[in-house]
Amino acid sequence: MAVKNDAAISASALSRLIHAADRAREGAVAPYSRFKVGAALLTRKGEIVTGANVESASYGLTCCAERIALFNALTSARKDFVAVAVIARIAGGPMPCGACRQLLAEYASDANVYVADSRKLKVVKQFSVRELLPGAFLDFRPA
Image 1 (cartoon, one colour):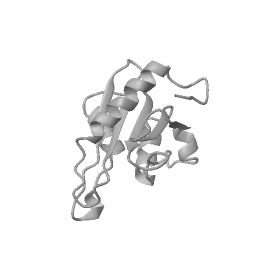
Image 2 (tube, rainbow, N blue to C red):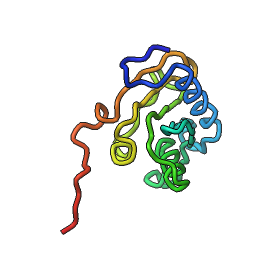
Image 3 (cartoon, helix red, strand yellow):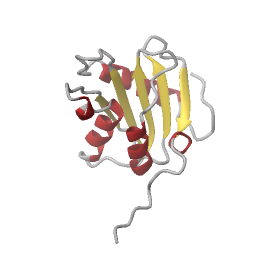
Image 4 (cartoon, rainbow, N blue to C red):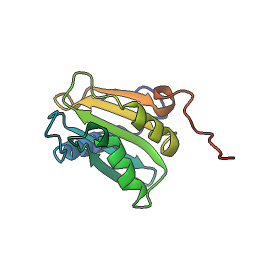
């Protein structure tokens, strides 16, 4: 698995993370699109927290795998994320949507994001959260 920069996690940690996201994908609830996505977050302590997408007939209520994993981690008092992997059966791997990018910018701003097609888990693309959402909306202070 090729990695792009020195801030990247070790090859063994990346392999564990990718496989955890792929396993999480099996739990996706996608009766409408049948597009199953799995995500896994890695904490600095080495903990992996996973999630899978959950669809609703009311499409706006659908929740992405990245957000499910992030919410699962945050509500379990896990923080300090160094990486997130997102896996689905799509050429080149699935890219996080805008809402997921915003939440990753808020809660995992220093993490690297790894994406892969579930049919080619050894072909991994890497991005930083900052690359995916430059100029994120992070400085909101109510009056």
